[in-house]
Length: 240
Image (tube, rainbow, N blue to C red; front, side):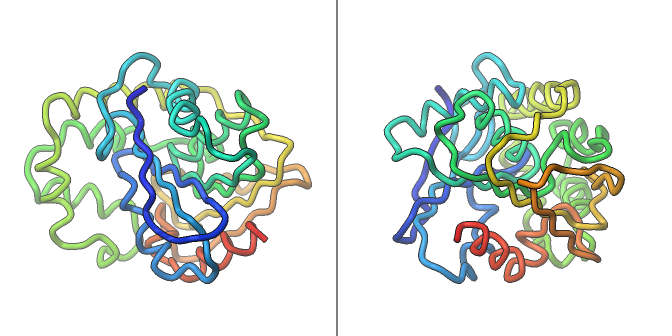
């Protein structure tokens, strides 16, 4: 078990957060800062990310889901889970493999449910050289570059140890090869940015009645950072 779970703050009913590829638990802070209802936020760092350990074993979304299940052992189940991008695919696999663990899902641009993942971005991040190159790559995640802090590329680049580069490369290839996660029977709230270039929404895909979809025009791959207030209200409404 190399995933790590951190209480990011708040009191009330628990909400588990699973970040996207190359990010970490702190990527949800803009969303939590404007969250309109009390909740206890518990954020996962996936293996190879943030404060978690190195990848040890299966790096597919299904394998990472087992790491998450291990750190959630002992939590009162079922619980709601919010997953972004890779974290969305992990959340879907978690629901499939541990059906009694999750009460409902909120998915932001979940990997596997879009048209295709941007392989250039996924493979480019672990190979990036220099803070400026990292900054330019990260700005592809959003429509307006101001949503990526000016020093974020430097921070990401400084965190790219040789071990972390290897982990990200392994996870990227596993995500690109993974089959699309199945649609679970539990309630699902789906959030997309219409201008997402990393994991573009498939406008021709239809979902069963347990899935509610919200699409933000003029928003990229990070609705929780580009439109935190609107995203927070949708998440809070989904939690009831």
